[in-house]
Image (cartoon, rainbow, N blue to C red):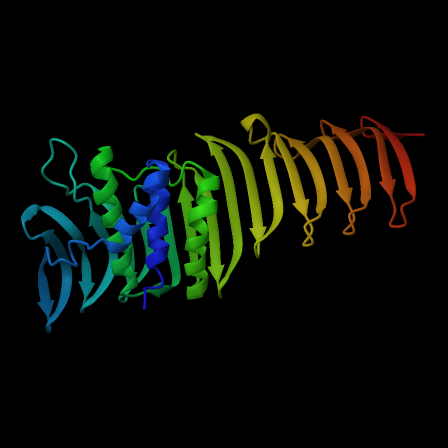
Length: 322
């Protein structure tokens, strides 16, 4: 039986690779990751540390057996159980270097022998597990993390993980469904976060009891935020468009559970109404429509009651005019 997180982590590695590789190599890449044997699996890793009552205790460092300058894994044990922060180290030093002591490729947070957080790259991917994760799933995380480094950092000459997926559409259509399926199957309380290359949060999902209970997606162009969407139980509830990349110049939508638009409103300076405002009843019929100018109602405002009867009021600088 396959590890529940095997396909999940294969997908994560593929997210990183899609923007770097031509379409024709995708099948080969998938096969390479699925069949990859880590150096630990091949017995090329040796550990050094102390034992108490026959169990590892205190600081332990794992090296590559054929090159003691290359650290593989480092952290602390407490009576045989991993605890605190463990680091996985880059195995391919950049040109001109023979050691990798200052080049962690990913980090793990442990408590009482269970993994509660896994971070890949400098700040690209973060997985957190509320109930903790044990073996063999953690070995699968490290195996695929190493596979990614071995396959792509070597050829690209980069020492840090590149951005996860240049194209949102590519991620959504090919990779994220695979990741979500495995997290939903596990019914683990978990969080999934992706950042852009410019250290901006792109995607944040919360999982619980086999459901995506909430999701935030943000669209960036380098360091400029253009769009934000909020989902509750996989239903779009709010959407914000930042006009011309200005986070204080907002077009805001809110949606009913049926999917219909509850309101459309424009703001400037974050909270000051400025521009068109439309609000609808749950059945889709309009409730009111009008315009604001610098926080004050201006021009004709139309109001409909639930029977559809129309009332029109004209405003100048927020004051109604008979």
